[in-house]
Length: 212
Image (cartoon, rainbow, N blue to C red):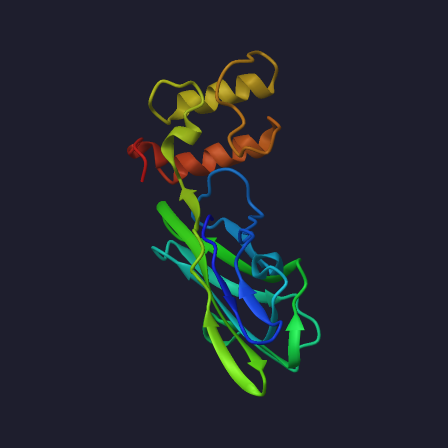
């Protein structure tokens, strides 16, 4: 997320993208089909600009992450809508949106592979009684991997199979301490990693150990 753009109006109202857009995921580590992930768009991306209305559309590049819902965290809007996968808010006057999360988008991973989530943002403001429209640059997307084989290769032999499952069980039981064992990347080695690996084996993620 490196783009920067600024448009100054005759008044003090401006639209700029000086700070990077923030995307936050509720799921760490590799995803599997059926896993859900939340990606948030933050008001800090708008750099304190005042808007009369705004529309935010989350975009999935490959469709492997399916949009389930959009939750609004915006207060004070006289009109709010999430119809058609786009969040729309309108205000009675030019309004500076808070820096925190404006919307939370929940996605579900549908199939193995890769996907990227980005946000297309359009905003309007009233300047000297005239409504001005600005289309902000599309942000660099956040990438997700769904069933990326090497993430599940516990013993590092280039394959994902029952041997990895045995190695992980030995580490959890304290018999061994070696291996790529934090499968879900949450900083702990426990039964959650075991469950994730079992699901990965069921999804046959080891059939192709290359990057998707």
